[in-house]
Length: 232
Image (cartoon, one colour):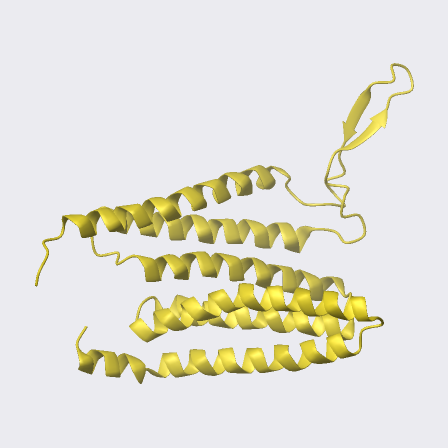
């Protein structure tokens, strides 16, 4: 990329929007996090709150950093803006929860969904930075990886949105003894727990495929680069 093109990308309105979103999100998270740590009931509790918020900040910060890097390079800009937004939303919701001790079910579901999409945004945007998507070998792998990430995100969204806070473990098998034989029988209550338990298996498969495809795409990119003629 030429210097003029780099300067154009540096002055991109989308990059400016992404940077402002990241600054605003971290300002809110920092203020709420400091108040949450300062108002904790004990010194140990304060340390735990601070450590937890810091871990989430670094997790969401990875998505913010890759999103801003994509905007800086003019790559996948819409996805990058969305990634910056959802990552900022996730850390703010976590910090506000630690500060205000929010236990509203709908609020916590939104927070869980935001955190999940932050992880998938980090995966997709990180891969966007790592590969060029210009070669015949890596391009289909890249788009397939993105498709699997989006599909997995939709499955997580559905599972979190339909989970019941009143009986969160009812979707898991509970072992009970039958009165006659003493053998164990697994019981399920799909209605009050997770809706569509088969989606858990699908999600597990999706995560395995996502991990394998991510590194396969990276390897394909490096293979194509090794074939390119060396110019001096």
